Image (cartoon, rainbow, N blue to C red; front, side):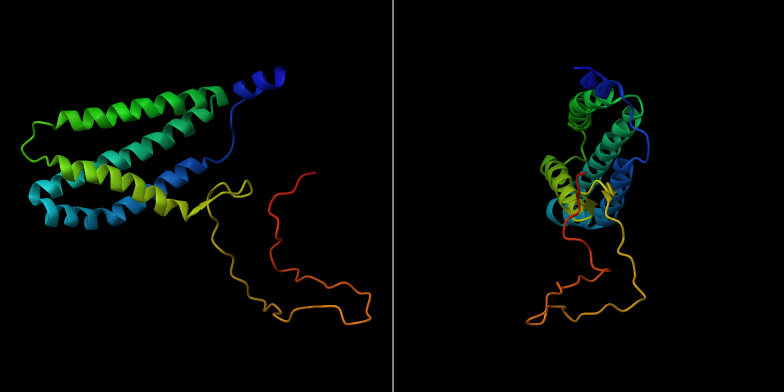
Length: 183
């Protein structure tokens, strides 16, 4: 019982991979923003372009706020972080609702463009980012870049010869098939 209490009041020290992931999402969002805005312009006209741009700002702000909440509260305690994630999600949904409600009577708003942008940008950026996130405890956050090797490796498979009791040897430069070990 004491271990559970200790876990909830323990703070998380070290790097904040969620901020790196959030910066990467925002960077990718800014890369695709011109394409999305041009699509909004072609489909819904000038109001669609303005609505698409507004939707992109809402979504990128949402991702940045989510990462900032986790980063800030993890330094306090794990329990505070869990509460911030839960209630922060609800607060960010309320902020998205308020941002849409605020412009409901604006002459430049196109609700189909804004709604499509919010949905497509959220899901599209998350799917795109999934390819670049490491799901390893050894490298949390973004996947590390592949190291460049300057030494040639042998591509010849090693095997035992018939009648030999020597087991095959593995290439020491090849990655291990298992990434998680338990002591």
